[in-house]
Amino acid sequence: MTVQGAINKSFILFGLLLLTSVWSFQAPNYIFLIGGAIVGFILVMVGIFKPQYSNIIAPAYALAEGLFVGNVSAMYATQWGGIVVQAVSLTVMVLFIMLVIQKTGLVPVTDKFRTGVIMATGGILMVYILTMILGLFHIKIPYIHESGPIGIAFSIGVIGIASLNLLLDFDFIIKGEQYNAPKYMEWFSAMGLMITLIWLYFEMLRLLGKLKN
Image (tube, rainbow, N blue to C red; front, side, top):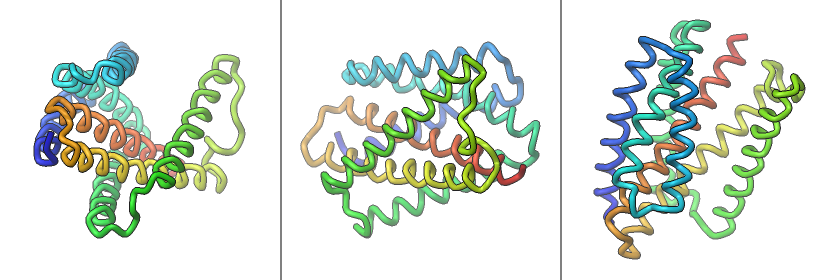
């Protein structure tokens, strides 16, 4: 595994993601929305336990997730014109900022830092899972998903945690080269970076939607 190899694989995956996301954005379909999300989740789970097949799983994930991303983007674009371009621009800007932070060593990725980010990410995941479960019973968690000050602050905090996850992704790629990880880990690490960026993009959409409300 090399850093350059992981970068090259990342570009390939984002090219595949762009292909299906643009298509589904232009022709949104509820079946592709749900199907893309479910297939993408299954592929991620398989990839975690079978990383040696990442050269197949990662491209398949990018194609499936593109269907989900395109449909969600279309939903937001229908309600607020220009929001997709704004979300993409902000996501790219954050990616660039975190790359600079990583290059300069401004925020070193220590074991304590890694543990803190993972715990915070797990906490956010639990909130979203709880939101989905309560939603099945038509119960809403107040404030954090609304467009008021608390909801906006929550979204900003989630974006901050998602951004810090990028540092973990960069560190994983660098460590992979240093420890001579197998070649297939280039695909695995590229998929991990894509997952974080998609999460960050969705959170940008959510924040912009709250601000526009």
